[in-house]
Length: 208
Image (cartoon, rainbow, N blue to C red):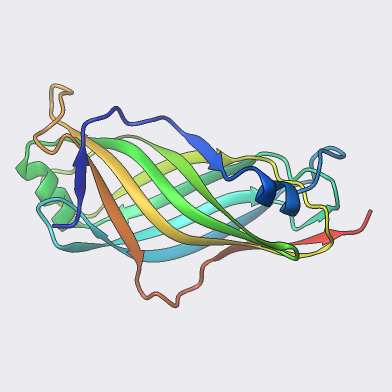
């Protein structure tokens, strides 16, 4: 069906950032303390491929505290991120079919930070706490929480933070807390429509 299963333990929340020459070229050295953060939000719609199902719609609202403006060499501070998703009733019914009463895992967002000096792709993992699967099946909410590392910029100009993709790594469990026959699976989610807004936030980097 397009979803891949795997048996390793679901990891906790973490943020993985590409490092090396690209990171050094786009982001500057540690400078002054963090800038004051402001609320940013973005709502996107995806089609996700779950086991036992064809594509299922998923609506995600991403919220983060990100400054509107930061000086060259000054930290943005660690960026707290929350994602609230609405999962469709068909997915709930499919999970209930295999005996799942709860769902937990990780939502991995593919993010591109577009700076005056170039683009920096990163992957951000947000932990999905144990969530009840409704019975009877109906649309239900899933919350993921995590953080992105502090960023520093060495060149003034506009910086755009875009959310480009989503991967769900999920573990359904039965009423006893045991894994179901689905074990841990991955659901690849594709933006639908593809040309929708991807920009979570735009900030200005000002000269010192």
